[in-house]
Image 1 (tube, rainbow, N blue to C red):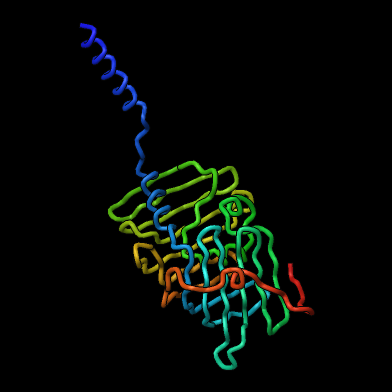
Image 2 (cartoon, helix red, strand yellow):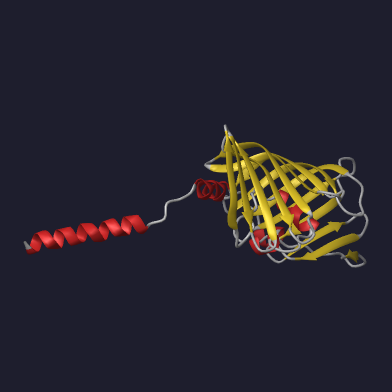
Length: 251
């Protein structure tokens, strides 16, 4: 009898533990899928073709090379004009700042706030948002709660909210297509569109990413090719940028 009571008690305890465990919702599964998409090798090198328009500058159609570090997240992009092979834009973004250098014009922009979730949960600087387009990752605001989840055929829309931001994520056939982050206070919208998602060596990449800020001329489209995972390069040198003397700093 004692053995029977002990066995029954153990079944009840195990059952209670099972009941108390919270099951994942469809929205949780979507976020988990995005977390998987955002997993990248330690380093990436890729050739890029870029169409970019930024504040106080005309549109550029240039090519170059991008270097990415996964943790902490860093991006270095060097864009070269095709005739004289001179650098027209040099961008460095890390977890602390964004630096955009225009060597020909002897001008630079320096923005505090780096590629972190916390930077996406307040006033987002447009240069920071455009830099995020080069990361080949899908941003997720911090401290969010799921406010809505909709599914229709192969289309999925999920809404996230924090105290300051709202985020809409659109997927089609399990591929991320569009992310819209809205600043609740200013109503400013930041959009990233993803195209041609593919896998290489078990990691997920996009061949084309467009980021823009509604109501401004801030926009970039990045086309990736020749992606190399874990290439050999000196990270200390690559993820460091020096601003030449005589450069005008625009803030």
